[in-house]
Amino acid sequence: MSLSVHALSVRVHRAQLLHDITLEVAPGECLGLIGPNGSGKSTLMRSLAGLLRPRAGEVRLQGQPLARLSARTRAQRIALVEQQADTTDRLRVREAVELGRTPYLSPLRGWSPQDDARVDRALAAVEMTALADRLWHTLSGGEQQRVHIARALAQDPEVLLLDEPTNHLDIRHQLALLALVRELRITRVIALHDLNQALGCDRLALLDGGRLRAIGRPEEVLTEAALRRHFGVGAIRTTDPSGQPALHFTHAL
Image 1: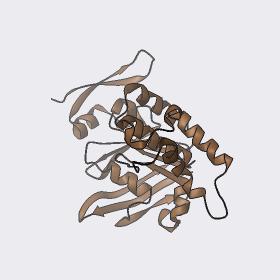
Image 2: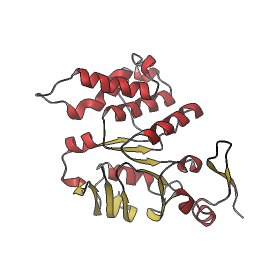
Image 3: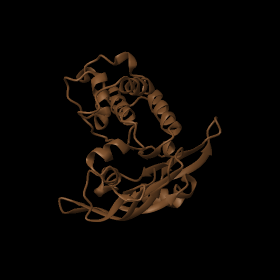
């Protein structure tokens, strides 16, 4: 499922947050969104999900303007995990994940064993099966984040949008989540704060000041000049013990 942005500009409360953004995400691609704080990553994520109305331009899903799709259709095709997502305290973990199946339910199509199977797989994918009966408010921040991701996976989307999903996760679950995201055979857009984690994406889109400054393969985008200009750091490019590229950062001079 392809996802594209065409000359997108967004204003919120009179503040211009995105300026003339144009990019395309190929079917099955993992595109990483990077940029300093306040660069517009979360605004772009919410726009891709159809939650913000653009001032100009549009988002298209498989060539169709997102604004012309019903909310139900968008929810069946696109799942978004936001940084500050919330859930009713009274819900149990499994009930929270079951909400991901809501777009498929109707008076003519009730809950089925297939829905149970989707929920089971989603819980297992984020290692939350053992906590399925726990109440939401008893979970740690990292556990809550994993439940939100499970709910998105249960939604069975064609496009998965993750806004800094490794926030609040310990290092083991960060690595497990990123491995899971890489293995998914759907279109993925993931906003990341950690630039070393971003190296694992197929391509990167660098935002700064609400503008798209660069897009391409990680080694093309995370150049020494770009790191100094947009992040205010220097970097030494190395290879870790597993043979993967890595960046070691220094204060920019």
